[in-house]
Image 1 (cartoon, rainbow, N blue to C red):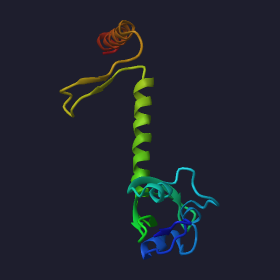
Image 2: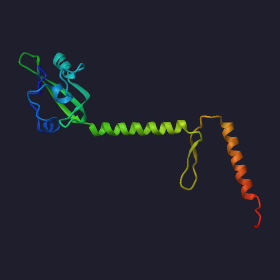
Image 3: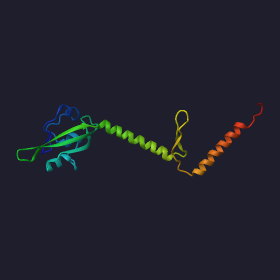
Image 4: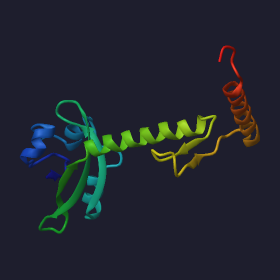
Length: 166
């Protein structure tokens, strides 16, 4: 729970295990290791308009490691009808974010592999059936066909040319 001065007034055990003892400290000091409030602070928005928000954030945990979390921000109204406190409930999505990055990097590697490939890429089952061209080479198809024909012709000539002593 955060007050209007952006100080943490209550924190549960899970929060403390990730960010340390934060009660009495500014939220931006605890989550982001900053010395002033974030420019695009969703909590400030909730204090202003009283609306619930959901935001993806990144910060730094008590051990100095980058952490990513999905935060749900809820207003707590005082007797005067104004937002007195904000409750932030966060879900750690650090591993999910890391996995998403790994998938994106993998997709990029395969995209580059396909784009920079000078030959075609085909898919076939273990028996060699069901061949399907997955990627068309970037260069002239006729030139590729001629190169393949020459390679087949050269290999066929070598295979069927009688050798001395046989």
